[in-house]
Length: 397
Image (tube, rainbow, N blue to C red; front, side, top):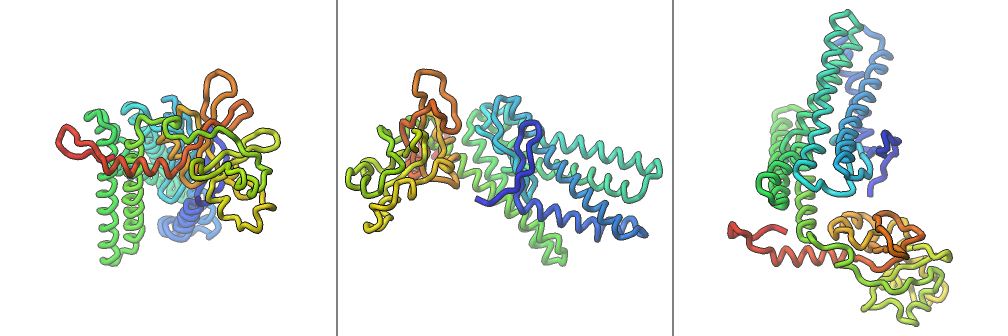
């Protein structure tokens, strides 16, 4: 997973940024300071162009953050927990713990960002006009006008009916509402996103061929949108294939926990892990979950080192192993397994009581393991056995 820069927390929402977003921000500042501002407001000292360019670029970053914050706050109002907001090359992404439960909830969450950008753009444009009328410095007027137009452009771009943009999610909510079929809505949004993305990419190539270098950016953006739309389509197909299944339905029971300090040789000699039990959770001296060890990790240790290597030395550490409740949807488990360990630990309370998803706690005990391989196998099987719908066509899973 690509490293992210932590920006801080606003209203309880954690913000991070990909390095690509920081690079784009630097390019914006450079373009403003060396291109637009000197051309439209000549005669100023060079430092003033740099000050205005950097300040305007930072203000645009704040505007993108507000766009994503609006999504996050709307999700909270729908009862959905927000993991984080990541700013990246094409704007931002608000990561939610779960998908919206209804078309109306999705509509409200998806429309919050573009609405915020439109309002902010209109306000900034109005302030720029007022500043111009009052005779304010040309650099300040230009910066405000640029910010206003960029926010309106941001809203317009996001309203394109292309998943994963906000417009694609709005299309998804409308098709979901009209058809009552979430899978069909996802297929429509993914297909629309790929069409829009490839049209943008082709237009960019044509622009470059005609001598407009800006077409490179259009072509790259279109390619990114098409690729992201295809990826979202695959994710939704996986969700549909696992619909109705919980972690308890797909888990491998884990009746014992291995002490993390056992040697690999001791585990092999006692046949604690094998074909019938391909993995087990391991625990620390204090009884806390220390990770998961799998048979392939043990087998990879050379025989002459197995008496000196301990289980904890080869296991997946707890920091990268997701913990889930037995009732967690299998599709959510698969999402949490992306980019980390291939195993998730199913935990339950030591005593009767309400169960909450989250990190391992002292009052929770491992009761099973879910394998990413098992989940992907179920998805592949579901695709081969896709049921025939009422319209006589096989339904994509």
